[in-house]
Length: 386
Image (spheres, rainbow, N blue to C red):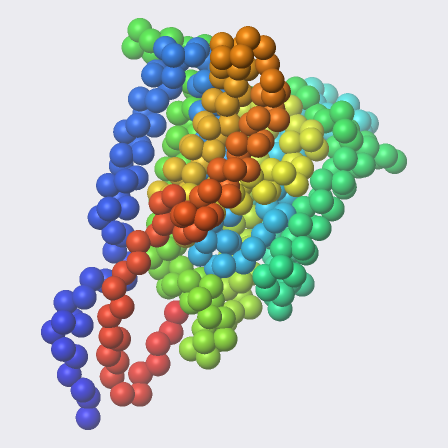
């Protein structure tokens, strides 16, 4: 005999609905993002618009890492490796480097490959996701610190591999890096040149800024759909209690591999955009510190909370660049000379900020709101599945 479901349970909000506060926060971020470059340009010129460009790239990376760390609870300290894979995919396929190094490629493409970023982007996503699966497969039974050490080693292996792959065949050009990477083009519209639209001049940093805003919006949309889906709830179940999740019928092996692959794919996409934006790729951009920095954005902003991750990216990138700009002038004004170098002071205050936030806001500056626990009433014999 079936037990009737009470009206209170029937009237409960569906699990796939995005909270209204989250949507309001994201819309607020969008409005601010559209106006921000004009404001910062009037205050500090194109340099600060370029800072915003890098803030958006870091937000893309942090949103990808948030899937692995925030949703699935898998500590990944080698995430920067997927960023490197995407960047080098763009550098190798979007520059004359391979044609200059290999005669058979030069015969086929005398001027180099010069593939469009829009063609390289899906390839970078696919290759990075493959590397994510290769990283996740041998680490399925590891947790906590052991998983962090393995992923850290994976990130360093990729960086050292790229740094030394200039002999016997010069593929990555080693520590010298790859130059002359093609910029982004859309229907002949070159993002590396200044354009006048509706009487307003848009420099390259402006063009890339709005391109990055569009890409961030796309990633946020995917993350929202993922978070409120069966797979997203399976991620959370594994994060909270993997043994209980397995007992409820979740294939933890496949779900973990999917988390690594999806997070890595966002890292590969960010790397491809970074390569086209920067026009130069070298192993120095993918050191361990970058992985720690991206993890700090996720943890300080609020693990598992998309608006919190975005806020963390804006604050950390903006805070560091602001310190770099005002540290020495402020010391000269107060003391008459520089006491502490700007870079040293920046790292000192960054570390103190990390300690302070972890002591007083351990869940992050903008943590994920906790929903009230509601009794789940099921029909006899039913089994919950994700």
